[in-house]
Length: 166
Length: 217
Image 1 (cartoon, rainbow over the protein chains, first blue to last red):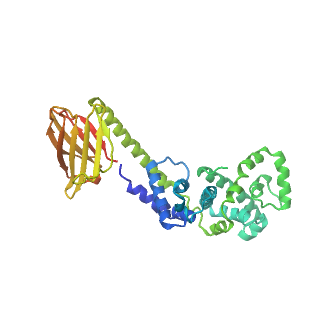
Image 2: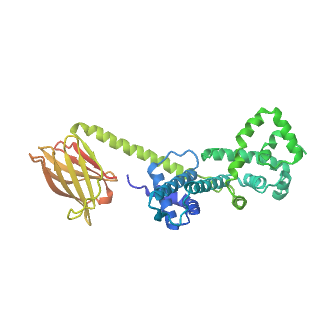
């Protein structure tokens, strides 16, 4: 079966730049990053997976696996090939996973409504109290409370869809 | 000011309750199994939120709502792709089944062979359990594709023919020859179908039954 240009094109169009940003944050080598992006799209196309949740988080995970695979392979090469790259495998893989969790969470937050996201950011990240958030967002504190609840529920649902557990 | 204690759960999980509401909610939690259940589900979310650094999260408040909320398009595309793949796999399985009795051999690419002048652009080989062996070198031409066929242990009577199928489903007879008693043949055929458009090549016996199928990946 020939490579389905439409599908591949649409993956690039919809997700290419986000995917590239994620991979670049892990490798810093633009050529290498481009290879990983291409391989990700190719692998996703080849497997034609049945995706129930977020397609983008599936792409991120696939890219993450490719980067980990590449890294493992490079470790098997003679030591001189490793010059300039960090050598502690636990550290490198941990870093990639950390980046994966970061982009997944960013993705999840972007899928919330703006009202829900603003309340979550105010309470969790900016450490505001309910009343401070109410002043900051210019809404009644009762609204902050109820939005905090519905935002969390919506986020949990999104994370479940994306396959993020813990 | 206090409201329905249930509604404090979200702000409680996110650590935003002031002391009065905090005391109120914690007292409520003692007696409310529903809130405790829900708390168990939601209390892990802040740990996950911590994966995103604060400045990155704060920067998201400038983003419009639900920017990435439409994963539907590619998912539909992939459903379609998966469906088409299943169909094409079934088609080939069915074909293999139908001609299996005729000692069908199905082969795949073995990659270009070196030092075979003139060098083909693709080489395919197929060998069946019965000993039938077909090798096809395909060369890209401006007019289409040249197919150099060599085979052994082929059917020994009737007219044999080589058919090329393109990816749109059309087919073309590239060459035909009279079977030899030795079962061997070396023949060159031609088709206007471009190499890249060839989806399969079939060797057929005198009754037009496929005896070998090569699917081009």
